[in-house]
Length: 381
Figure (spheres, rainbow, N blue to C red):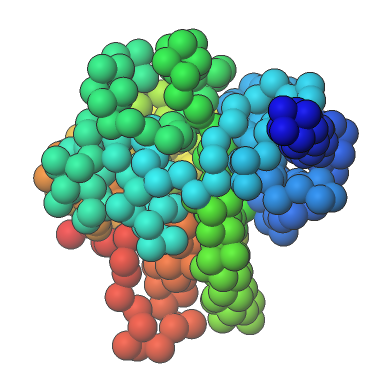
């Protein structure tokens, strides 16, 4: 009898070892494209033959990163991360997620999963209805550099969604120490409006609902392209000035930037052609004045709430033609009491709505009269 027990447990051990070997596939085996983005350039989802687990690969996840890659192993059916894997690991279907950017909240909301958010950074500045109406369920864990890690740990997160600005997040070492998995979501680095929105598929994969994510994203490019066609045959493109001074400098976006692409797709002509880099660059007030004097319309006009405030605080610009005509617009129509602006939140996953607003500014004649109301933008009065 003892021999039979020994043989049974020996066989079971061999079977488990074989399964373990199969589960611990080599990292080199994860080459099968599970999801290859059509617009985003900063991520891909890969798998391996015989494995249900996937790896979310994130490329150059912060500004200035070159040939930097982070990986998240999304485990299914008890499968282990492959041999040689040095990234983070999380079980598929993460339910309790901390979002360090409001755009992460917007992505989960677009997927119908806002209730998975258990922590945010700066809750008062977030527009999302679920977050604002569930203060007991969604903790404000503070800002990068001043994080309340005890509160973060108390939320029992499955995963923290991070972003990097000019380098890796300062939260990394503490999260490693606490054993809390994390993943970089780099949509803010995408210059394509549709590329930014496509990151919701990456978040959907983490949440275990990639097919739903693909279904949510799929009609967005169609709607976006249909709107572009509405202005394709329209006549002259209005020259477009952007932004307002920040301190003594006026930052102007690159001609390849997200905002410049939206302007072009809406039938506008972005007035600043000099900056062809991959980031915004400062100009002085004199150069800004020359540009503004040639503009037909002004958008994203800083923090100004009224045209009178604009003229009062920027008296030098009060006489330029577009300001005299009142052709000044801001993307702050959906701003909460604390100053949180939904344009920078849900606008990321609704580029078609942002494009519609800009068409309503530049070419209202391209839209039906009943379809000219703006969602994020408003004219300064």
